[in-house]
Amino acid sequence: MPKIVQMLKHRGSSTVLDLGCGTGRHVVHLARNGFLVFGLDSSPEGIKVARQWLAAEGLGADLRLQSMTERFPYEDDVFDAVVSVQVIHHADMAAITGIVDEISRVLRKGGLLFVTVPKLRNQGTVFKRVEPGTFVPLDGPERGLPHHYFTPEELREVFWNYDIVDIHLDRWVHYCLSAVKR
Ligand SMILES: C[S@@+](CC[C@H](N)C(=O)[O-])C[C@H]1O[C@@H](n2cnc3c(N)ncnc32)[C@H](O)[C@@H]1O
Image (tube, rainbow, N blue to C red; front, top):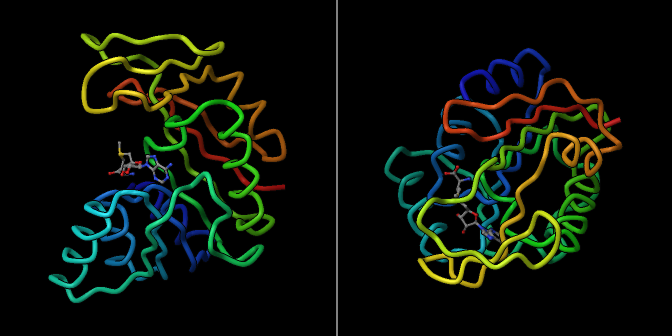
């Protein structure tokens, strides 16, 4: 995220959406760096913790409790950047297509997208395959929640209307995609 912040500053970005912000680690980091930050997550506990963290630091951000599978609560072309770390794979391909459409609707032309997704399934969890690349855990805390495991080629296909800056694997074996909306 520090590298992303550098890129955003270099690009003169101001408004940033953290899609699936969870307990707010990126929201707080971005707010500390002076961006106008928006966050969306379907976890009431995540949003609550993120709000408390922001308040404790005297920072502000617009956080919404909502599923990313619904229409995002923002106007078209409002964000200079969208970041989403370990989130969009929590869906099947039909839902992911809708999520990507919504990202593209709210991200302005020339805006930066940074997305990470896991390459590998959790060891020790029993999964059922429901479609190519999509698996549903049959046990554990994410039981019943679809997980899609992207290949780099699929990331390029899904984000076909973006200029891909980079796709690499990080040290946690997550694919990290940075791209610019055409
Ligand atoms: C692995 S956590 C990552 C959280 C945060 N991006 C981070 O890097 O710390 C995945 C997040 O995705 C959120 N999430 C999963 N499904 C979601 C959905 N349908 N809509 C919105 N958020 C969702 C979870 O609530 C959780 O906060």
